Every structure is written in C-alpha cells, then in structure tokens.
Image (cartoon, rainbow over all chains, first blue to last red):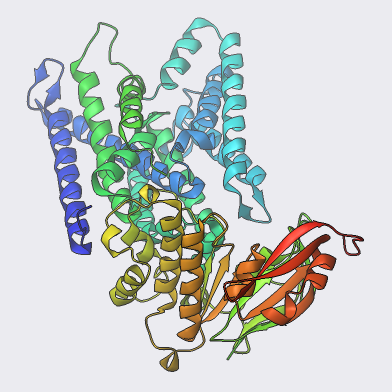
Length: 332
Length: 265
C-alpha cells in the first residue's frame, strides 16, 4: 500500500517511454544490419535505402496499429478492442481479393497507388463507412453497437473473401492469401509510405492530446459528461482516428494482427493506465515490434522465402496475450 | 442561489422514463431526497439537473442560468453527478480517479487532497480502484465529485455548487450508509446543494431536510421530509401500505403490506 506521489508516477512513465524509445531504435538498428547472410552492414546505398524505407514503413504501420488500438479500447471501454474489430482489416482483405479476382491487382492506378493498395484502401474505408453508418444514431456512436456491427462486417467481409478465393485459380489464391497475412514489402510506392508516415505522426499527436479526455471518458457516461468531457465529439474523433490509422497501415502492409491489441496493454502494465503515456508508449512499442518482426523474418528463412509478418505477430502475440491475460492485467 | 427545475417536460427517445411539467427548487445548505417508485423519473430528473441531458421543454437552472446551456467546463466546476454504480474502465489508482474529477478544470492538488482526506481514502491513494470494497468505491466516486466542484473552498467565496447522487447507499451495509448520509449532511452544512435519489424512505426521513416525491413522471408532493413522507401519501404513490414507528428518537417508515386500493398504480 505504498504511497504513490504524482511526480513518482510521471517519473515511472518517463522511464518506460525512454526504454521503449531505446528499444525501438535498437530494432531499427538491427533491421538496418539484417541481410540475407545474417547481420552485415548494407553493401551499397541502394541496399541502405531499401532497408531504411522498410524501417520507416514498418515503424509507421506498427505505431499506427498500436495507437488505433489505444483509441478503440478507450472508445469502446473494452480491453479486447483492436483495429480488427472495426472490420477495417477484413474489408481491406476483401478489397484486395476482389481486385485479384477481377485481375486489376497488378494495374498501376493513380498517384503511385498500385491496384492492390488502392483496393485495400477502398476496402477499409468502405468498411469504416458501413460500420459508422450502422453504429451511430443521429451522429452519436454507441459503443456496444459499434462492436457488434464491426464483428458482423468482419465476418461478412471474411466470408466474401473466402468465397472469392474459392472461385480463383491457384495463382491468385496464393497471392491474395499471402497478402491476407500482412507483410512489409520492398515494392511499396514511396509516396504512399510518406503519406502513411505523415498521417500516422499526426494521428499519434492528436491521440496523445486526447489522452486526458480518454481518461475521463473511462468513467460512466453520465459522470464523464458531468466532469466536462464532450463525449459525442470525443467518440467521433477516436473513431475517425482509429479508422485513419488502421487504413494507413493496412494499405502499406496488409492486415497485421495482435499489435493493436497487445501493445496498449503492455504499456499500461508497465506505465499505468494514463492514456497520454499509453498512446506515446504504444506508438514506440508498436513501431519497434513491427521493425523487429521484419528483422526476424529477414533472418529466419525456412526455405519458402520470407514469412509474412502477420504470421509471426500472431504466433508470438497470441501466447503473449494469453500470458498477460493469465497474469494480472485484466483489471476493470 | 438555487438549483431549480422549471416546468421540465422530458421524453426519452425510447419512451422509457418521462417527466411532465416538473418544477422543484434545491437550496444550498439542505439535503433533498428524491423518492418514488421505480420508473417514476428520479434518475432522469437527476440527469437533467446535472446537465447531462437536455429537457424537451422547461429547463434546469443554477442561479438562473440554464444548466444545459452552460459551457461544459464551467458546469463541471459547479455541478457534480455521482452515478448509481460508479465504475471506471481501466486500472486507475484511487488518486488518479479523484484527479479525473478536475478533468476540465484547472489543476488543483489541494482539492484532490482535501477530497481524499474527507472520504478517508488518503492511505489508499496508490491502490487500483477495483481493489477497494464496494463501500470504498462509492466513497471514491463521492471524493471524485468533491474534487470536481472544489468542495474544500468555502461557500461564501464561491458560486452555488451542487452534488447530485443516484442511490448512493443502495449497496451499502448500515454502517456505511449512515456514514454516507452523515457526510451528505456535512456537505450541505458547508453550503453545498445536495440532491440524493433514495429508495430507503427511512433514510430520507432521518437524514434529508426536504423530500420530493415523484410518481409517473410528475411531482406528487414536495416539502420538509417529515411533513411530506406520510404513510397516506406514500400508500397512494407506491400502492402498498406504510406505517411509521418511533425508534431511538427517530421515525422509521416501513412498508407493511398490500394497499386497500391503488389509485396511482
């Protein structure tokens, strides 16, 4: 029952944030030196550039997913909320599979978007629009309805994806299945990465600024309004934020699971529930996690080429999540 | 210098609880109980007074100013609501929960400390709220509300402030119930407007200065609680028979059985 003074809390948070930042930098360093023959410095500026862009896009994807998870867990007051519950990733998967079926996945479209990333963007934004439309009543988002609608849209989009795959000849099936597990690719248009990085940076800043409001919104609805939270506006902002961050990361890397679910919990476990700290910490941890995962899939070659990152995060993230669950963090 | 409801009419979108032409005044220095059968509109009236919902017609006002039209920041500093079963999503510590009361307001560690001291939670400040007992959690919600309106500041140098509580003693054992009602009396004594929804009519009679009786969304009676909470009136309102008994210098009021006729249903 030791006394916890306000400045001691913040000191603990600062230490955690510095440690996570350091870990993210270490992951970036490791990725820069991870080559086909183990750790070795990049041989030329081309390889240096290639690896740097992978680090940047991986960091944006991880930070975006993790902060989207924080926003959704606050919005839905549910510790199990993650980007996938909004149906955005399933929507993107359906979009990509549809594009593959129609044979437009390889087509170059506008603004450097490939057919695949354009389809992912349309799929995830389409899912967000459907979920929002069904989960709001006169512009007011109802958390429970939002979860239900998100899960249902996910299931329908998932079924649609399997249906399309069922119709596909083998080549398309392999390509779209590979996409459905998410990975960082070398051929992602750099303009797209720049846009995703800008959106993610902006999203993390906005989320951090909404941190205190998210804390207050953890109260019962009526009490939250009573302490001065503009609850409807906050929920819309969090939904738009989570939607944008998820869409940006899905377009770059496809669906990558568990990062958005686990990072917020891990940071909460280390630094406490104050959302400003959780946002910044999750951004650092998410970025570090994806970059580290990309390093691992580069170093581990099981003969079939690089494993999709989404497989790694799910295989490692699932057990970690169960361990956290069994340990102590589920305290509501 | 009052919190008032003026001719409030309110209908829920789903048609659950409604209020029809409800008027009432709540003065600083007094504890007012809102009583009435389930679904009478007690919680709805409390939410309207707190500015959490807006009346269809009529208005809740604080010192003549519409509560619903107040900027959230200013309203937060003057009216605090304690919900029926206060919870908070996340492993926040006792101190963090109390500090959340100051969310929209200037940082005020003295108000936070005073609230923790007043509710005897200072030695629990670092504990996660969900580890507290049910009674302590209720006290924590009250502490949060006190920090919110800066209840440590003297009334004569502050505008009218109110604390509204929805059935705060429903889940409490008698000792904590008495402690809570005593605290509400102290807060009124310090110059706050105190409005409390109660199901326990004896508590309303014993601890509250005034009582407002609601039935079917309308005010049936209002006034000093001893004069208002009479068995005849309560029988009409609740549709069951009541008797009062004297005990320990106080009056207890108990439901004793079926009404001979139920006129209000």
